[in-house]
Length: 356
Image (cartoon, helix red, strand yellow):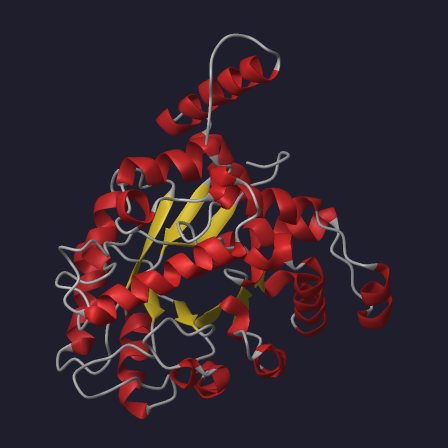
């Protein structure tokens, strides 16, 4: 909870890119690109930098819970997937692995599934992950390699049976990576323009576009303006809030103009970046006057509350007030109160140290 508001981080990761899990140089390149994003976007403060070998390559579950829910202000979080079986022996982050972390705090974490439509048993795998792994949405990674194939398209009719199986099973939230390329994957395979057709064919599904299509923001906005079931998730875009606030302001002005305040979703991409500074900077951020005048929009406190939790909660059928009440005395909430007491004692000069 932040300033009394429900916080729901819609984009986090629980990955394994350890040396033992890397199959080849492509797996090494993939996690090295993540780390380049981590170091390149961070504020100039050593506490936000992770050690590559011991901390960044493989996410420790206890550390994840501590940073997101105890030291961080999230009340809930979504675990994303990138399967990447061509790069990693056990995959990068999968539905089965996500379920192990979700099951530790099932009231706080929603885990996504991850299926490659090119698998011969892809439809059956969708059903297995819903029934056996308890996934409530799917993350689709269209530039993923599979043998000689270097990607697939969201509007390929061969994929439609997977959407239909999701609908049959009551799973409506389709998260798509449509944003920056991660080496060695192709930027062109993350092109957002394949979203509009399935969005119109399947109006009962919600298409949540992670990274708001960057660097193709214009294409994304034009599609989202036509398709009311298309949403923009701020992961990666949000990381610009500190080092490039003007660019971030222009992204937000476009999203507010084209989509409105009810279809913008908060996500931090933790552990690429810590959630703490992103949320703090976002809540303190003010839209420049010239952009407010040009676009006719503003980023008010009420709109920020929708973005940081209300919008994604609505898509997953969660009532924020009821959820906050149910979490008030769970183990993580109690640990958070103790952490805050210790931090307050340190701030006032009382003996003791607390660090992020």
